[in-house]
Amino acid sequence: MTDRIRVIGAGLAGCEAAWQIAKAGVPVDLYEMKPKKFSPAHHYAGLAELVCSNSLKAERLDSAAGLLKQEMRLFGSLTMESADQTRVPAGGALAVNRTEFSDYITQKIRSHPLISFHEEEVETLDFKDGITIVATGPLTSDALASSIAKLVQVDRLSFFDAAAPIVSDESINHEIVYAASRYDRGDPNDYLNCPMNKEEYERFYDALIHAESAPLKEMDRRDFKVYEGCMPVEVMAKRGPDTLRYGPLKPVGLRDPRTGHRPWAVVQLRKENREGTMYNLVGFQTNLKWGEQKRVFSLIPGLEQAEFYRYGVMHRNTFLNSPKLLDCYFRLKESPNLYFAGQMTGVEGYIESASSGIYAGYNAVRQLKGLPLLELPCETMLGALSHYISDETVVDFQPLGANMGILAPLPERVHGKKLRYQKLAERGLQAMKDTLAAVQKEETR
Image (cartoon, rainbow, N blue to C red; front, side):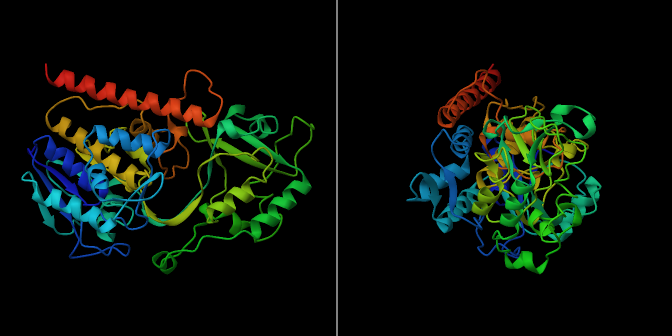
C-alpha cells in the first residue's frame, strides 16, 4: 500500500476529498482533465465549477440543505469556506459568485503542498496499488465510464434517467390510500394504493397529457433515447386513454376497502426506505416541469396534500447502482481500495456531492492509517445519505438529494412540518458534533 491517495476528478466532490486527505497530512494526487479536455457542460478552466445554478440552497438549519451545510462545516469543508468568502445576496439561500467561488477553491487546491495536481484525463481504473477515489461526476468521459462499467459488470452507465417523484408518508391521506398487494400476495405493507374511479381517472388523464414538459438541454437532445423500462408516464399516456390502466395503473388484483370493488385505476406507492417515511409513485418516471407535477399528481386521490421530497427528473446521467455496489463509506464492496464520490454515487446536488467527497476522503485517510472507518449515524444528513445510497432494500435505485425524509424518524410524533424539521435538524447537528468529538477524543488518547 502506497502512502499516497489518488483522487480522480476536481469538481466539488474531488476537491473536497483531496482537501480532507491533505488536511490529515497525507499526500494526494489529484487528476483533472480540464483545461485540456472539457465535458459538454463545462466551460470554465477553474476547479469545482458550478455548471447550473449558483445557489447552494437554503441556509436555515431547519432545512435539509441547511443541516447538511452545517455538518460539512464541522468537517472543515472547503466548499463552505469558499462559499462564505464569495457569497452574493440571495434571500434565505446561500448563493455565490461562481467564478470567484471556483477561483478560491482552485487557488487553495493548487497551492497546498501535499496536493500534486495532474492536468490529464484518466481513462482506466487499472491501478496496481493504493487507494483511489473516483469523483468524475454525471458526465464522466466515455473512456473512464467504460472502464467503470467493466469493473462493476454493467453494460451501460450513461443513459437518460427518468426518475419518479417521492412523497412523504405523513402527507398521504391514509383514509383514502390503503395498504395491499395484488391478489393478497406477499406482504400487504409493501405497497400503498391510491384508488381512482372513472371520473377521477379521466380528470387526471386529461391533466397529464396536456401538462407542460421540461425542455431538454442541447446535449441531452443530441443523445436522446428513452428506454421502454423507464418511459415517462406522460409519454406513455399519450399512446391512448387506457394505456396506463393496462400498465402502471392497472387495478387488477386490488379491491378498494371503502367500496369492496375493484377501482377503475390504481396508483401504487412503494416504500423508498426501510423506515417507510418516503414513498415513490410506481411507474411515474416523468419529464414534466416541477410545478406541473405538483398540480397534476395532486389530482391522485390521497395525494391532494402530498409533500414532494423529490420531483421526477429526466436527464443524461452516469451513476452506479450504489445499493448493490457500495457500502455506507462510499467504498466499492468488491474492491475496498476504491471509493466513489459525487453524483456518480446517486447523491444529487452541489452540496450533496461535496459532502460525499468529504466523507470518502475522511475515511480513505483512516483506511490508509489502519484505523476503523467512521460510520455516521442516520440522524445526521450525511449519514442518512450514505445509508440511502448503500441500502440494499432500495428498489429501482435513483439519485436523491438531501431531504428530511431520509433521516431516522423522531422517537415521538411531532405535529407540524416546521416544528418537526426543526427538531430533526437540531438532533442531527448534535449527533454529528457528538460523533466527531468522540473520534477526536479517541485519536488523542
